[in-house]
Amino acid sequence: MTVTYLSAQNRCTIEQVGQIIDIYSRVFTKPPHSETPEQIEQVQADLIRMGEDPGFGCVMAFVGEQMVGFVYATTMEAGRWFSRTAEAGPGFLVDVDKCFVIDWAVLERFRGRGIGGELMTRLLSERAEEYAVLGVLPGTRAQQIYQRAGWTKVSEAHPTPSNPRPSADLLCLKLA
Image (cartoon, rainbow, N blue to C red; front, side):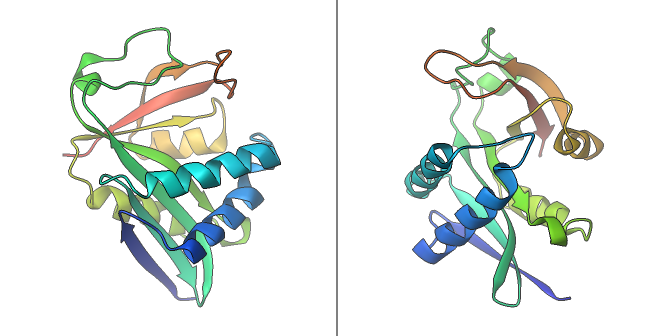
């Protein structure tokens, strides 16, 4: 099996967005995420909007013509932190631009082949920020993967009336 990787800076094509959302739907509508069709629509709208951000980056994996995985991120500017946290966030992160890894997924039948790790490595190697941050559901396999790769927990995010998304552990990785 030959896997090819494609990086996109500052925007994905409409076809790529459709493929990303197809994978996202197949991965994140299952437990423990159990996302709804409305949440999937919001992810698509957010992905299209984020593609306009100068700090947006995406890496996609293909086997033949089929996209089998993706990861995308954008810059979280200095002074910004997650709105669903009780505390202000660690100063060493709040005070600098951060690479905010938004979503990362590989189709189930392609997992365990190093594709996900290569996607993340390629994404992070292209970033100028000193740190990367992301949110992950506590106690999941994904959290274990991140921790084995050196990510450390720095905070927690919890549901709010305006953002009822599930609680998440916020993790950080030093890039430079």
